[in-house]
Amino acid sequence: MLMIMRISTAFLLCTFCLNVFSQKTKTVEAEYTYHASENITLEQARRTASERAKKQALADAFGTVVSQYNTTRMQNSGKQSKVDFFSLGESAVKGEWIETIREEFDEPKFEDGMMVITCRVRGKAREILTTKIGLDALVLRGGTTRDYEDDVFIDGNWCYLSFRSPVKGYLAIYLVDEFQQANRIVPEEGKDYFEIIADSTYIFYEDGPLIMTIEGSTVQNEFYFVFSPRPFGMEASEAVKHNTDLRPYQWEHRTIFTLPSVLSITRFQKWLGRLRSKDEKAQVVTKPITINPKK
Image 1: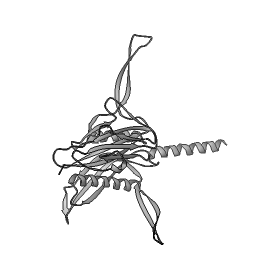
Image 2: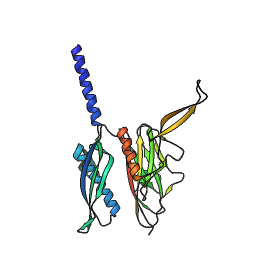
Image 3: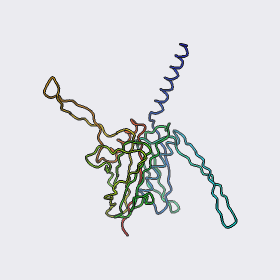
Image 4: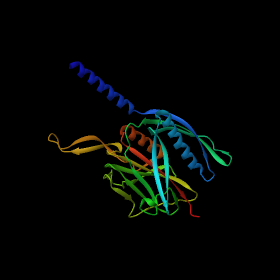
């Protein structure tokens, strides 16, 4: 009996070590060449090339999983019935991007009327071992229902944000503007957290919508929805003064967590990287948008 207990304990310890090790980040890299159509801007082409290079790096490091869906559609027309069978395949990478270490672009080339962009990325990533929380994050133009979801705005359009989670947790939303500044827009100033109730839909700026404005040519912005079942933020030091029985006042230093209000895109990405490295349940949903001038 004693021998069995020892073997079981050793097995459990090995399993624990494997789980811990698999949660660690690893450095990945890849190169991707994107052929963009003539109506795509240089910034949009670079963004797409970067996203696909990251997915390629994740697929090379952790592999992909393919899901197959079978659908049947029936149509009735008078006395005749038609049945169509569809088989759809979906491929998803088994890893997630944590932090970008390096991102490089070659000078754009033009071939057969298309812009060719090559991107090389290197970053930290980790394998996905558990099913992600199914978050529903939407950017809405001119309305507050999901029918208004859009990623192209015209100067002066109203913008609303929608969010829903199947589990309770905490949310922060940042807008990265054309000046490469990450601006916190949820929660509002003076609040450290926005708490999410499970299975509840939240519409942000319903009482006073964001007005998307630009000066000059087309710009690209990005919304970042940052969610975790646990409170999160940046570490900061705070000195607390309190009464004791030994002396009138005693100062105690402790670590608190606050959400940054404005960060450069470099510092913002590093903060997100540290957050996701420490909190395996933290998720980031990115929603890029384009804002065009009025015609």
